[in-house]
Image (cartoon, rainbow, N blue to C red; front, top):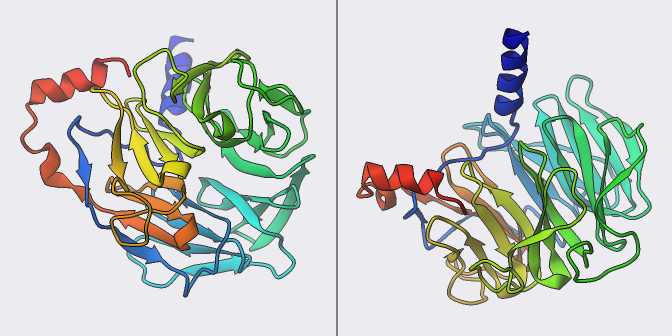
Length: 324
């Protein structure tokens, strides 16, 4: 029994389809980004990015009704899509053989690589602003207009459960949401929600319907002011990375508190600036990709390896065990 339990535990811990790098406390990225995809490829108003553990990059080009796929070391993307699609809001890739896609017409479909076919999964009451699949294969959906986050099975056949918020009742109390956007579910099944119009990020511990503000001015902890946060992600040490959409920057927590990481010089279209950033993703080399929505481009900020070279080993270890 002990061996079986350990095997289940190991599988649960290691089954990740996306990258959650570990960083030193002084980590930095290049000030100027490289444009990975721009308007000439993507005439976009909505879009998303997902980078899997094989370093395959998936970019949703909403207005062109396409998903572009770059495998490691390839120059030109593979393209999947259909002319009858509505706008793409979100994508999630739980393994190399399928892509889950959320649309503005409230549908969720799955693309099967083995047969190059699309399968209807489910249809929600409202569009999913973001989707996420946890390590137990539950599909989460942030229903922006209904002020809730719900979950179902990946085949869409189990009844929906409300995981955060109260249906059709927006608010700023710990049990409510107002325009939930980006969602992230960690290995403990704790749910993080970018609560856009409350200017905060909420943490709903597994099985709890009362949230705690972990980023935003209303937090009881030392934090940072946010303006319409759109997406959130965790690194390997459970530090938060947030696309602070209304402030045109990417911010993150760490052992020394929150700080601005990218786009810290105000709104603009220069390589060091962002204009209403939305999705964020890490590649296997710890570079950061950002969907810079109003500039209609996907930006890549390269990791500055030297930024961690002079950090004492003891400092790095302490930074990993101190609470965020």
